[in-house]
Length: 381
Ligand SMILES: *Cc1c(COP(=O)(O)O)cnc(C)c1O
Image 1 (cartoon, helix red, strand yellow):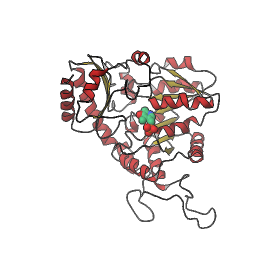
Image 2: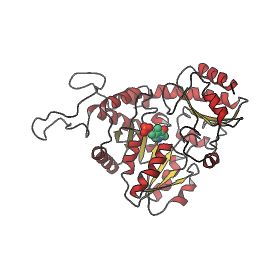
Image 3: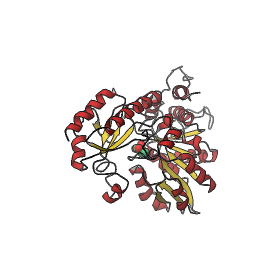
Image 4: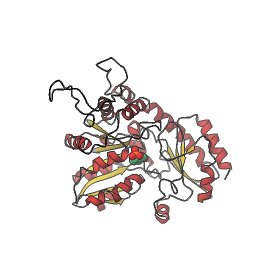
């Protein structure tokens, strides 16, 4: 089955009890048993819920995996993956990653003696140097946030396999429509479904997709034993969002491409970060491993000050100033004072995250209106 068909049909059957075409929201905590232990596959809703089961089957199909597990947020999903590790194990992570993931690695898992090393993995050969006998997991995010670097998933997985290390890819920025890491050799895929999968900025949700049976069994155990599950209503919203994932992401990519080109030619703009440009250092890999270049665009200003960026951010009318991404509506943000505010300025500047860097999550509005909005806001600077 092709992607668009899977998005709408995979894992979804009319409800056997009523014929309801859309998966019902099974708002129940428990299920009637005929006699002790004799039931229809559902006993208690932390372990299993039919709305969640439908979503999990759908997500497994979209990522070309064999099993998926849903959680109350992207970070809860990440926590479940880290629980596969044992004290003393090491993780090598890309150094350009979501701030909340960094915080969890540094302030939660270190307390269980799981230590993460951060390395620039857009050069795959940097990985080899960071691996030790204790390394058990490689953590990738591509495209990265907010610099939109691209990591060669296949090349990283090849090195990891040689050392028998598992690879987890946070696929939130790309969505399974643009890239399927399990096909490139990764063992685990994570999503903050809060972003493109949900797609309407109305739910916080996370999931993990795998194809290895042993990892699947362990994650299933963690999902039930730790219990960081989403409610059925949230699962329903993500299922509903996924039905249009391909259309939304396609349009967001088209809009982002036009906006990136417009910004590149704007006299007040310094540099545009967009993997679709031939001049992007990882353009060739992006072209190889992604279907399109994504809906995210970052850029900084010739007038490289926080004040200039803030002026721009408070001048747009369609681009809403807010954290998050991947919704139908366009958002604008200032990483230096918002998502990446906790990173020291020196460290920020080193990776190109300047005082005036602005990040756009391009939505699916009419692109002419989005361009006009940016044009008007840029004249304010
Ligand atoms: C938002 C985000 C997360 C965290 O997900 P939540 O659903 O907010 O917990 C993880 N990784 C990336 C890349 C994100 O953008």
